[in-house]
Structure formats: structure tokens, C-alpha cells
Image 1: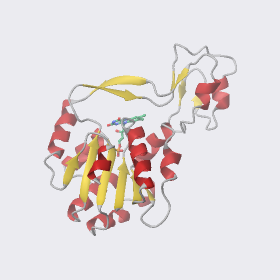
Image 2: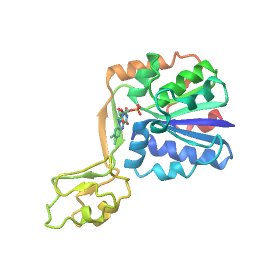
Image 3: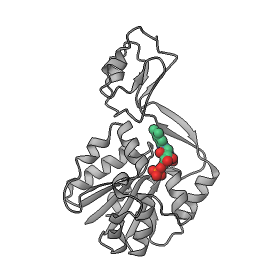
Image 4: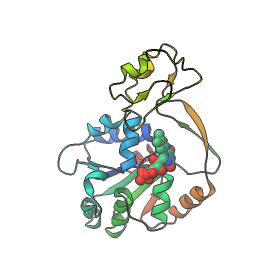
Length: 231
Ligand SMILES: Cc1cc2nc3c(=O)[nH]c(=O)nc-3n(C[C@H](O)[C@H](O)[C@H](O)COP(=O)(O)O)c2cc1C
């Protein structure tokens, strides 16, 4: 099968999305991976970018990045021409869902969904904001200020290959590649990785997801692994 998989800037379900992509790759599908700008940044923060990149390479197996596509998104022409058998967006941020249900197509991923509609390419969307209420989700590396001893020489900052840490202040997540070296180096365990937090789903985001269920040609799934059953 020719599959296009879009990743947006959500930490939630990101690990499962990458694991599902790896399973699909084992089955010899041709997979192109499309990244929104935030999708690329967030993949790096969670240390998953290289795993995704490794799955790509070759014709219809490209890593398609927002920053390389400019404003007209020429690569999404493949969708309007019906060249793919399936488009999957997982994980899908509330931002991207909000745009899709309002017909906005001004990012690589929202544009791909719009063109897939024109080319009748079946589309599966896995939203982060699916059900009302609270959601347990995972954070990237985080400097816990209450544990930080403000050492004269910060071993975590010294261990960071990206120079992403301002000692005693913060981690610049836009520099962080999620390698975890800082967590291993800090003798006071002041840097956490994969910490769980609870966030509340906003009504407007849940309402937008409801609208998505009525979209022709779009199937809403609750977990990335469900894509394996669809295929
Ligand atoms: C570490 C991190 C995790 C994030 N996780 C989520 C998430 O789970 N769900 C979400 O809707 N937005 C999340 N965001 C915010 C989006 O990345 C942001 O709204 C972005 O503009 C979405 O752009 P996109 O929809 O084009 O990918 C996260 C941001 C960061 C920095």
C-alpha cells in the first residue's frame, strides 16, 4: 500500500504513532512521512526524530517537512491526484483539527487533508482531544527547579550536546533533541523525562473533534495502533 502519515506537534500518542509506523514499515508498505513544523520540533523534544527519519528514504518514502514545502505545498498535489491509498494523521493536535473542520488548509498537514478530500484518498485521523474531561499525558525533558541545587558547575548542562540548558533556569526545548544525557548527568535527579501530567480538554476542541466524525472520507480513530486494523 502507498501510505502517507502526517505527524503534528502533539506529545500525546506520539510514541505510539512512531511504534505503529515502525510496524507498518516491517510490512513493506511504501510510507511517506509528512511533518508539520511543530510536529518536527516536538518529535525532536521527545527524542523520536531520528527513529522517524530512519523509516524514510526513496520515492514515495520521503520525509516531507513543512519548512521545505513553502506556501503552496507542491507535495500535497499527490493527494489531489489520488496517488496514495491512505492518509493517516497521528497524533493530531487540537490546532490541526480546528483548522480541518473549518476548511483551513494553511499548513502541510491541513493542506494534505484538504487535497486528500479532493482526490478521494481515504483519511484516518487520530485526535489527541477526543473525549471531554482530563487527559494524562507525557512531558519531554524538564528541569525541576525545586530539585535543582544550582551547583557551581552544572553537570547536566555540561553533558548536553545541544547546549540547551541554562543552569538553574530552564531547558530550551527548541534546542533539545531528547537524548536524555542531562537526566543521567544530574546527581540530584533534577531533570525529569517522560513525567506524566494531567491536562483538561477544552470544550471547543472536543466540539471540533465531534464535527470531524461527520466529515466525508474521514475516519476518526482513538489510537494509532487501530490503523493496523484499518489496513
Ligand atoms: C512538548 C509539547 C507537547 C505538545 N503536545 C500537544 C498535544 O498533546 N496536543 C496539542 O493539541 N498540542 C500540543 N502541543 C502544542 C502544539 O505543538 C502547538 O499548538 C502547535 O502550534 C501545533 O501545530 P500543528 O497543529 O501545525 O502541528 C505541544 C507542544 C509542546 C511544546
